Each structure stands twice: as structure tokens, then as C-alpha cells.
Image (cartoon, rainbow, N blue to C red; front, side):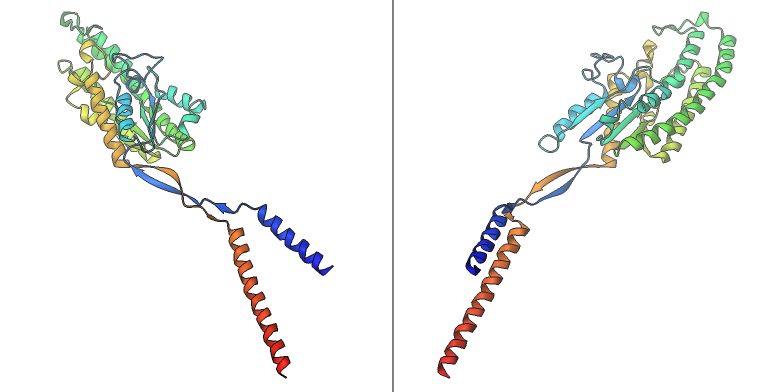
Length: 329
């Protein structure tokens, strides 16, 4: 019976050992630093969408030389062989800050936001610039960029500006509320870094019409101050306006009565966004595997077996010595 019990016990031990995986491959998370985001997302208006560029389509934002696409091409090459790169552009031409807020709150962007490393926003122009463009028309500037000085009614234009002053100020108050809420909504949806671009002044080159340029400079200045001051709500500022200052005639299509950046303007914005990214820095995580090793269970089993064998050997030696001593006696 004792032999049978010992056999069954040994068999049970063998079965328990066999049923356990003998080796394991250790793994660990390794964080890698990179200057540019592995995944970036662009939101906002027609500036981010690339409106007016060759190849632009409202249904396909990926085949024009917008600053988003310039950076996509650049980063795909830079991160090749590492983590790779992905760009998502959900900008909508004509969008106001209220439109962007509604889009974010709809939840339709959540899937892309959740794993984005950088979210870049261009917004605010449509909140107020349409009002300013109407003033240009009242001053006799046609949609093809011609200036009809003889048709300008200065007093009517000045009156128009005064009436619009209230409308623009109301739009700015609402913009400030919206940009705060946009930032708060994004902070709940992504761990990525959020960037907001300042708005360049496309009307600054119309130096012959001080009423327009002064008005534009004041109101866009207020909007940019709001963007900077509200960055404490969790986003970084990309000061596009600073690099466009004094260059709107060469970096935009304002000569054609179009406030949007031209190809050179998009290259400038790409440089600005790229500099902001590299100043912020990013990272990505990989899983690295070590060499196979025995599982803890098997290590214990082997160490336990060795200890038992040593103990058994000691007992046997003790018994043998005891028997020899007994024979002597």
C-alpha cells in the first residue's frame, strides 16, 4: 500500500508539472522619444482643409499640397522603419468655432481622437471674416480683386464698419466661449497634445483703405489674444499670424479676393506646425521580448526537487553511517 501511495503521489506530481507551461518569454514596454507625432489629426476650417489649392476637393482632403499633407509626407519618411506615421484630416471648409464644437460633441471624431498624438486646430476666421469681406464689397472691391475707386462711397463704408463693429465683437465673445469648451471637450477625448493656430490677417495689404485694415487688425488682434490667453485651458499656440505679418499679399490669394493661403502660405504654415511639434516632443511605446526562460512554477519545482534530493541524500548517508556505527558496536 505504501508503495502504491508513493507511486500515485509521484504520478500526480508528474502530471501537474506536465500540465504547466515549462518556459515563458519575458516582455516589457519600451518608450521611444520622437520629435514628431506618430499620429496627427487636423481639425477646423478651410485653411486646414487646403481650400483653393490645386487638387483640393471637399470630399478628399489628401491630394492637395496643404500643410497637413506636406507634413504627412515629411513624417512618413522620417518615421519609416520606426513606428510609422498616420494623418487624419477632418477639417471642414466654412466651419465656425460653433461648428467645430458641435462636430466634436457629436462623438464622430472620438475613434480618431483617442489615439492621436497631436491635434491641430485652425478656427476662428469664419466667425468674423465674412463680415469684413462684406465691408470690402461695400467699398467697391469686386470679387475678382479689382478696385473701383470711383464707386467707393467712403461715408457709406464707414457707416457699414460702425454697424459691423458690434456684430464682430459679439462674434468674438462667442468665439472665446467656444474655444474654451473645444479645449475642454478635447481633453476628455484624447491624451494627445492639442495645438491651436493663430489667425493671420489677410486684409493687411489693402493699405489704401485704412478703415478696413485698421478694423481688421484690431479684431483679428483680439481674436489672437483670446487664443493665446485661453491656452491655459490645455492647448499650445502655433503663432501663424506672426509669420504672415507683412506678407499677406505673397502668402495668401487676397489679390483675387480670396483670403486663403496660397501654396507658399501652406509651406509657411507647415514650417510653423513642424517647429511647434519639435518643441513639444512626442513618444511611442513598443513591446520588446527577452530570451525564453523557465516559468516560476518550473523553477520552484526544480529547485524544490534538488532540495529534496539533497535532503534525501543526507538522510541516506545518515542511515548508512548509523548502520556502520551500530555494526562496530
